[in-house]
Image (cartoon, rainbow, N blue to C red; front, side, top):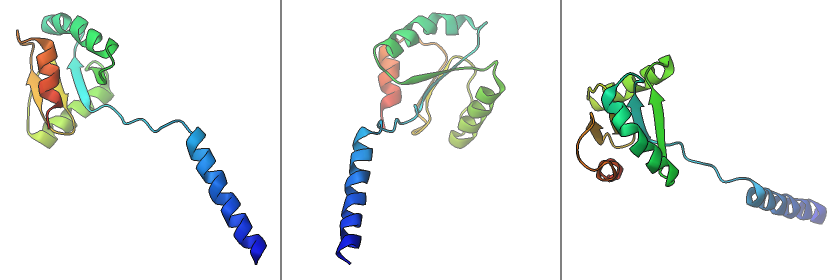
Length: 116
C-alpha cells in the first residue's frame, strides 16, 4: 500500500512540474475593431489602432470582407442590440462601443472601451 501512496505523490509532483513548464493560457481578445478596406474613416483609424497594438494593447482587427468576421459582428450586434457600420470599436465582454471615427483622441476611445 505504501507504494501506491508513493506513486500518487510522484504523479502529483509530476503534474505540478508539467503545469510550471506549460505556457500560460492566453485569454482571447475581446476588444474588436471591425473595418472594411475601402472605408475612408477606417483608413484614418488604422494607424492609430496599429500603434495601440504595437504598444501591447490586445485589439483584434477584423476585416468585414471575411464571412466569419461578419458573423461575429452580427453576433455581437444582436447580443448588445447595437448597430454600427465601420469603423466599429467594441468590447465583446461589456458591450462598450464607439461607432464610427470620432475626432476624439483614439487613446481615449480605447480606454473608454476598456471600462467595465
